[in-house]
Length: 231
Image (cartoon, helix red, strand yellow):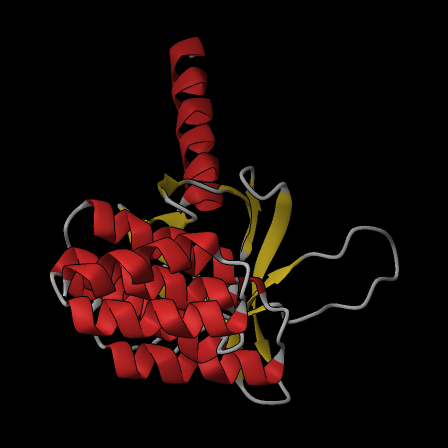
């Protein structure tokens, strides 16, 4: 009798546990996808064995804790989240649960359409014109948006340059120059990429642009003297 009762309790426990952690096929189909975290960054939601996982900021296997149906705790964000459809536009959002009582629900991270891209997607796929158009649009909306930080583009370009990926480095520096045409530094960096690639004419042209914008740029002046004397 005791063993029978123990067995019943065990089955009940397993059933209860599964009901808390398992996600329905309908829920999986509805929520799988990418959510716009900011103007050029996404949270990707996917499932393994009906368990929800996320990819976010370089972490590829974040496993949120399921609290109840449609509600999860994401330790890496220190946030509780829900998947909610905004009745105003009928779009699914990954929403942060407000902290505190009587707080209004906000629809934070919109689910993207399967074919919807962000500028960095185009950049990774070497679709530089589309990447530039996306970044220019971000700048138009908010010139202080962190995703178009001049220094970050500069660092990314030099990273490609160190790997001898001259074509990509040049394109990244050209995007930076289009975003910040009044910056001496962007032309100095673009000139470095052209020089490394062997194009001394365009290197010289961009060092001169840099010097026009900043007459105190001694580095640009030195490179101009070297290239002109070489030619």
